[in-house]
Length: 179
Ligand SMILES: [Cu+2]
Image 1 (cartoon, rainbow, N blue to C red):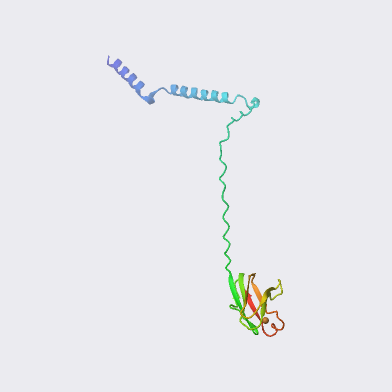
Image 2: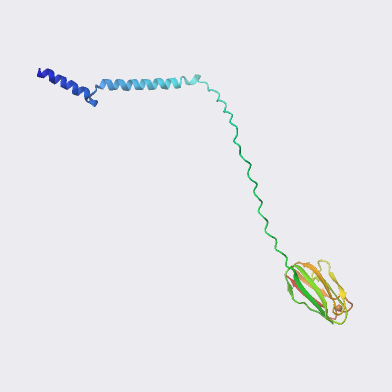
């Protein structure tokens, strides 16, 4: 009676301990798993030499998404051109001299005024001292008269003189610098 009860207790303990399962059962389980794995492997790769590559499935036609055209980029504004400042130059004329209200001018447009402070008529011509460019002639003006012309002068040196006979030799000339 006691021996029979002890055997039953041992059986219960043996069956309820997880790690106490028979080694044969666990091995069989792993063996079946490997077989299953190999069979699966063979199924996916039947035989390499006779495998035929299937043509790729045609790509599904997907309409291109609407992409709005890029907004026009406004061109950068050009740098504002410098506003030319009109220079002024007065050329007083006397017997027998020409003088300048200022000896140096900035390049650009300049209003040149011949002012006759003498008693005789005088005129004025302006030309670059290097001889390039035509001379600009002012009309002759009498005593107290003025003549004005607006010229655009490039940097350089200019000669101004009176063209009436003998006046240049008598001293009616001067030099202007434009920078
Ligand atoms: Cu003169």
